[in-house]
Length: 169
Image (cartoon, rainbow, N blue to C red; front, side, top):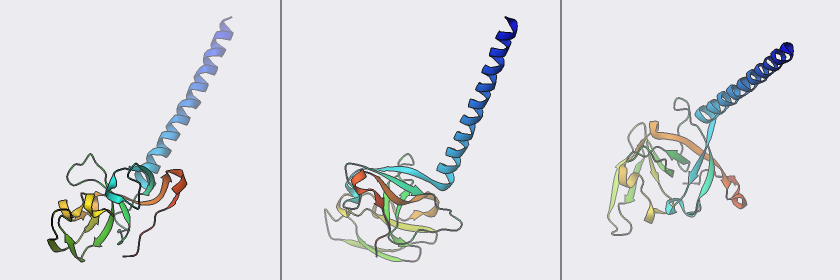
């Protein structure tokens, strides 16, 4: 009887160890994937209409290596909001460092415009639907360090599944 119970505990501990190793490997894989390769982002609201649906999109974004890769004009990027670090809006890059950008400050209320030069190490981002978007027109150029990734694919809604590449600028 004692040998059966010790055999049970030996088998149970061996199985628990295998499960623990598997869970640890899975966690490490997910950590490396989401922190260094890519991640899923959720976009909702009208600011990127007509490119993205205002009712919501699930997107696949790649992490951008800040040392080797800079965003290009037309890229859709996920940024850490300069106004609220808990938010990660999705916008289009319309200007890169050194570009001279002219934009209408508030297209709903007036047609006054402003011109700025995008500083080194920054990008100018804007929503595709400029009448309803908080973007660089409100909070200024965004430093590279706040760019979380570049959007590659729309995953949901499934009928629009496919790549989201940069648009010609």
